[in-house]
Each structure stands twice: as structure tokens, then as C-alpha cells.
Length: 162
Ligand SMILES: [Zn+2]
Image 1 (spheres, rainbow, N blue to C red):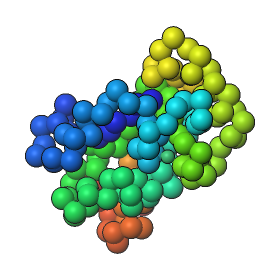
Image 2: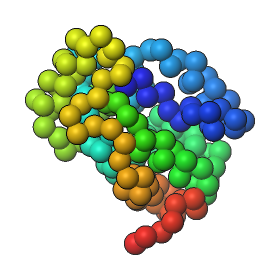
Image 3: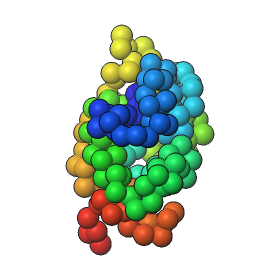
């Protein structure tokens, strides 16, 4: 949750002004997909696997919230770093009512996890069952497929495996 990404220390060292701006919003509760402010109770909580290995997730974020990445980095030289970061997320992913439609998941279960997160002492640290880091290669594959679909070529930083 509070996945104000891609704002790892590595990314903060980049000249991407927009990324600096986002990093200052890290205390807000936002949808981890579209970035909209929201309350946890109104959303769904997914595992890192459910969210980050979804091609639809990557397609959406590259087309919307992170569309500037392609403008700045047209060959995708930095997106492998993004995939590593997303794959390593140890907590649940908060997803809004609109964005949940991107995912082929059991919404009743994801809603229940949102309730559990909201009632936990540290909602941002809540991890749903089956949550936590996943194999970065699975995430990279989903990311690369989405990038190719949107921009026509495989990102240069991700090894082509098919
Ligand atoms: Zn959303």
C-alpha cells in the first residue's frame, strides 16, 4: 500500500522531476494503480503476484500514470528497475473500484482483505495471504509485453525471453 512508485532511492537519483513530486506524496493513501486518493475501505487489496504479474496492470500504468516514462526513456532502458521494485513489494496493493476491473481476481476476497487492512494497526503494512515479493522475471515479462503492445518494441532493459 502507499505504493508511490517508482520512487526508490535509485529512482530519486534520476533527474526525473515528476518522480520527485510523486515521492513527496508518499503518506497519502492512493490507489496503487491509478494513483487516485482513496480510503482503504473503498478499495480492494491484491497480492504482489496478482497485481505486478498482470500485463493489464502494466499496460494501464504506462498508458496513464506513468506515460511520461516513455517520453523520457523511449527505449525502456529503466523499466527493468521498475519491475524489480514492483516484484519486491512486501505489502498488499490497494486498488480502487475502477482499477479492480483490470484484474482477473475474486473481488469478494480482495474486498475482505481491504477490510482486514483497514482494521489493522498499520494498514499500509498489511500483507494479504499469498502476498509479498515474487520472481522479478515474471513481473518483467508482463511489463515487457505491455510495453511492446503500447510502443511497438521490447524494452531494452528487459531480456527478451520469447
Ligand atoms: Zn485506481
